[in-house]
Amino acid sequence: MERNQIFDGIAESFGTNGEGIVKADGATVFVPYLLPGEKAKIRVLKCKDKVCYGKAVEIYTPAEDRVRPQCEAFFRCGGCQLQHMRYRLQLKVKSNILKEALRKIGGIEYPVPACERSEKEYGYRNKLQLPIGRKDGANVVGFYAERSHRIVPVADCPIHPSWAGKLIDALGRFMEKCGLDGYDETDGTGQLRHIVVRELKGKFIVTLVSAERDLKGIDYFLFLLDEIFAEYSFYLNINDKKTNVVFGEEFLLLKGPGIYECTDCGVTFEAGANTFVQVNESVRGKLYDKAVSLAVTDANGVIIDCYAGGGLLTAMFAKKCAHAYGIEIVPEASACADSLKEKNGLSEKMTNLCGRVEDVLPELIGRHPNATVVLDPPRAGADRSVLKAILAQKIARVVMISCNPATLARDLGILTGTLKETPSGELEKGDPADGQYEISFLQPYDMFPQTKHVETLVLLCRK
Image (tube, rainbow, N blue to C red):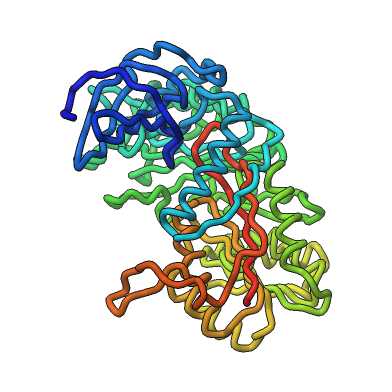
């Protein structure tokens, strides 16, 4: 097969990103937005070593599970990948994505159960994060296209609540009236880089990321925000470095308390602009309740919660066990966790440690060798040294929460022995008979409907 070649093909199955897989002329062609069983005219966009990527030019026979996407930018925006299929099929796709990641990356064969559904298919996200840039001499606000930093402009986003569209409109009016430009990553010109909004039970934290400290017209923007949010805080974040990191180090609080208190899962907690909170409240509750039931098997036991964020899950552990430790690298989040333990009467049962997990955990599990370790790392997964510390201490139970099937499969492979490290630090196929752990429980949760992403909860028990 060659680039720009056009052929007719039928999708046989799903790929690991929810795309359709078509076999033709001895090649495997991955076609986004094509469902199994659908026949389509396909254009080859790229091909290498019998692995090709294509585009469906025309679909001859739409599948029963194909639906019209709610977002007009769906086929251009990189935020969602599955709006073209019924929700019941999305759940099957996500279970299959996890199963294939475990098999192909981790060398793990495991019967992945059906993905736990979300109560809301749309309007579920409590956090909005939008890049602001320039395109053809005009400002653009939107989401990045798939695998790029090209901004696809949007006027609204259906996986967020109704306030998202109002916020985008207000931001555009503010920039136009005050003569502000979006940030150009190529030459570093322009003032505004990102807008980030977090909702906490009807209270909002709005953070505008600027490349310049002296930003004109902020009062006008606050006036526009007053029309949208009844109760909110506003930060101006200064990020003047050439980097892909969203936030700079300096947050200037210009309105409101900056940190809000709310109650969920029976715990009163606080969160600020830089505190991690799961984006789907209904799924978060189910996930955390199950995590507690898996981790706490002894009321006199100790739980070590790694990558603990603002301490909500740590507090849930502390209520059920003798003592819970939370390890978190972000000072703001760790401070919120300290406030949380006071508000919930957990001062004697909960300790928060601010630092890198790889630095703090080895010494902590050395003092508590019988503790249960909980890992809820970012998308990059757990640091290799963290896994080595768990293996060296022979921890009896490990609970893992992951938003990335690929890095989860890698980390599980290391702990179960299906992957082993070479002297050069590379990973290769291992013998599970040599592994210290086996999977006792695994459940995917649909924390992110309409997208390819899936949250997974795993319990590992030492053999």
